[in-house]
Length: 310
Image 1 (cartoon, rainbow, N blue to C red):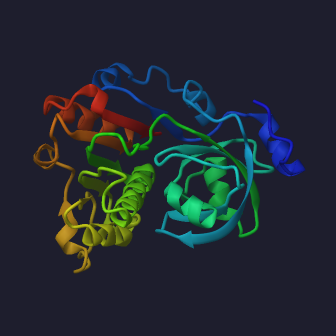
Image 2 (image 1 turned 90 degrees about the horizontal axis):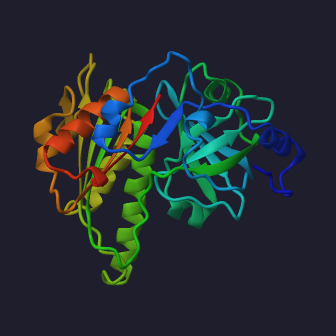
């Protein structure tokens, strides 16, 4: 793919390499397809190869890191000033090009399109691994670093005002919260728009988030998620699940935290085959188990959308 002429020489050299990379695989599949897609090879396949059949924009845009925060012991959140022509839909990811790093990262945006419109920035929450792009973020990235990004992905929520109302069920495992948090924030933005216009723009149903992590420290964005649920108690709800919690849960989190994995009973309480649209993102075994449960509960396969993090 060609790289636009407005890229800096550093970003241009990165974009032109087009190497394989990245831990992200994004697919729109039904549960039956999931069962069929067992890993037949132990060879590690990189991001660009895994996502070769997915939609991606043609343009690679220059960008600059303008903020870095520690989200957890293993996750850093990058705030990135984007090119004026950069755009994305809630839930999509970027090919992340780093000057001097051969591999290309694949990271879902954890911010909303509304933040990009208001402030000209996007955010990525990246977990530490030895994979070169993630390793660079955690060991070498500083404010002011220049990178380049290209948007891709078929996994997104982008309703039009004329679309019928749906109820969202968002199921996340670990760092798989990123695209679902983007969708949750986008839904919040749409509610604000509809509120300002007396509900004439978007018909927004309910949204329930089931989010599982090892412990409360690894529950990313937890305080912001709770704030959203408290701002729109008739629209949003959430259940956090911790599978390896060895300490007491903070009192303010206690009402939202369950010990153990996401259960069939919880999913059933939020599944309406006629209204529910489910987005899943997390490790492959979790996605396969949850998607099968949802299918058994009667949710049509075309209403179960997911991406797997490898």
